[in-house]
Image (cartoon, rainbow, N blue to C red; front, side, top):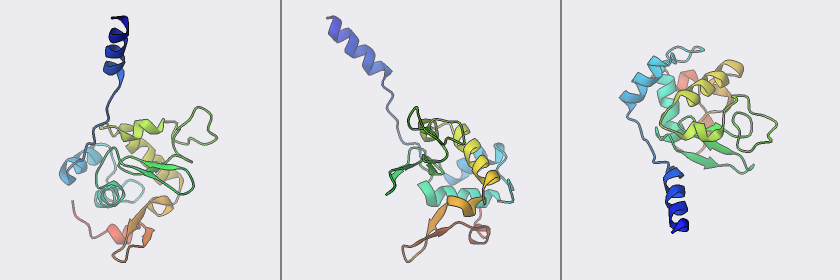
Length: 149
């Protein structure tokens, strides 16, 4: 009886992460309210386009990379430099747990993306799009300038 109660409690505490896939319009409203339009010179369209190519607007997207790091969330923010996977980690420039980047609440992901854009080369630093030939290339303002929201 006691074991069944403990199992029930554990079951209640375990949070299943359901993928939240935003629509372009809903995401545009969230990004606009968060001040991303023209942030560090990148238009709202730039941010929307980058989120689409990085995660297809999926908040729970995770990509394991060859170097052992993982890209997390709608912006695919890398665990090696920007978020914390383990207790002891040399870098965590966004001062956030990686798990906070894969929730429906985009606050931490947006704050971290802003930090990346401000402290690096913006979207040219680490975000990539896949070209028609299957090769990756960095996102740039000129690539996404024609995208509309």
